[in-house]
Length: 193
Image (cartoon, rainbow, N blue to C red; front, side, top):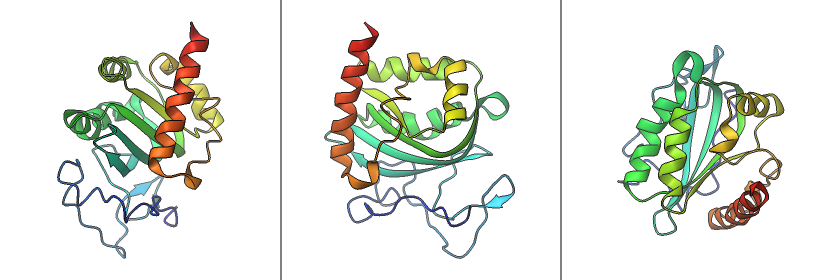
């Protein structure tokens, strides 16, 4: 797992540790010291901790004018034991929302397991962003993770599943990803009516 590093091709365009508005501003990374673990396996030192014991993130891109952020995740998302959504919401999402971000792309292809609890934080987050014309999209979740998210009823608050799986985001620029999801979410909401 130590070879799985966060996506880095946008580093010339955005760096969360240099963004004064970022919750990760000022972080320093040691490329040679591996300290964080998932399932007793060391992970790459570029992943950021935010309070969870099992889930790590990387803020890949933020556009304050277009009001969107792209985050990538690795590990186990465990709301049952560790209330990961609380840490994510309070430590990462709320500071971004305080600076106008209302559209959230969460790349979840390296989320190995999901253990849901209740949906209160997701509901609050969804209501907050929808009031401002925003949305939350989880991209490329694994089938067993999707099943648990469905069992937790997250589909009422978060966009995921088809067509948000198999989303080839690495071939796109951040604004293109946001625009594609914007179109997909409009279509998904139209189908729910």
